[in-house]
Image 1: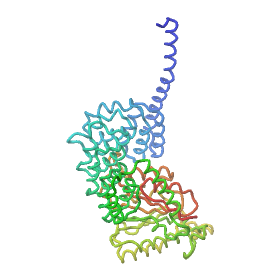
Image 2: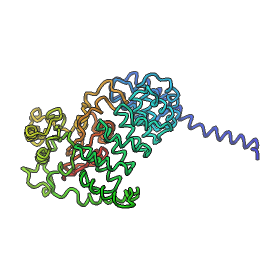
Image 3: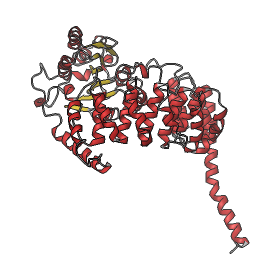
Image 4: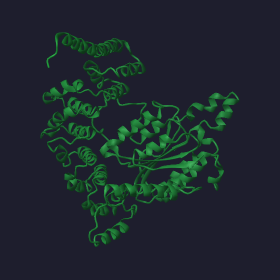
Length: 525
């Protein structure tokens, strides 16, 4: 039945009124962009520029996106990262459509890689055909291909051209690694055989990505190759053990002989099959319960050894800030030490751990407070000479800004006390593991790609010990520090084990370990 004229007028009025708030909101966003541009022309201090960029969050529109895109080439790293973070909050396909349309004509590979990155982090599914076209050509840039694999992984769709399968065989190691990560997360079983080949790749980061992906796909054909790889030394033994657990639900740790014997027996069992996802979930719950009951015992004096280690390239990072001079409270857990100071306990355990390192292990030590004290500035073999030298270095460590310094300050000798040296610069300590000094950021670092050193990095395992929250440095918010570590470690793939001593809130160290493939140990208060 057709509308009468009065009803038609009423309906038109309703549509018009309904559109007014949206139009008003757009005008407000455009006004925010105009004010931002005026402010940024005058702002000179980095902190004020960062604060101004943050104002564009919640003001999504095409002009805002364009302003933020320009800032991805800003001379200041914090401004670049902040702009990228704000762009990650934008989700409307219309915001990105102009860039999608321009992609086929782009000649600048860095600009193209940046657009692909943005489409991925904002999960713009409409951009998948353009992403595939940009990365699928014979002359496609390695950075573009790397970002394309990451983008498809983030969007959650593999596309229609089989791009990820092609990228698994790419000449660039970072591209192969990113493709393996995407294939695993998207559970693309068709690429199982390619992943199995990659567990013997020339780069350990690619091997790690392939092992992790196979643990998610859970193919029976991967079991024997994973057992074979486990027979080789290095950190990948633990990753193979975890993948084998996920595939079979059996748990023999990094012991290739036990795995081989058990697998040989299973292959003689008629009708044996890979457990279902439901059976795997039950096995996970059982494993977690078992670890909670039979994990680290009360009073165990060597938490470093309690974390299984098969790595041959290890960095130990130890807190020597002023609070490490405090006494532990739970006396019963810390019997047999020279005293009850936190640093005394940690130093003793670390020296004991150094004694357990095998000759084929390479290691280094960093102590941190406000600044860093580095032992060798490179990995060295754990031979008898270097183990002895390392223990001398550890023995000489003292808490900076501890009780002695506080006493000097109380008596008026503030300069001698140097309390400022005893703060906790957690970010600087963690960034050292990546070869980065956050207080001296690279002025022209690109926001795309894995970084120049990631695929050549030797350190694969970090033990990080601290007793307190960050109190100084470029970043002190634990969530922001965690984001920065996770962002970098997507390419570096280091395992971060964390050890806590003291009574501060320990969620940060627990999350740092769990989100970066490591284990968290709470020594006690």
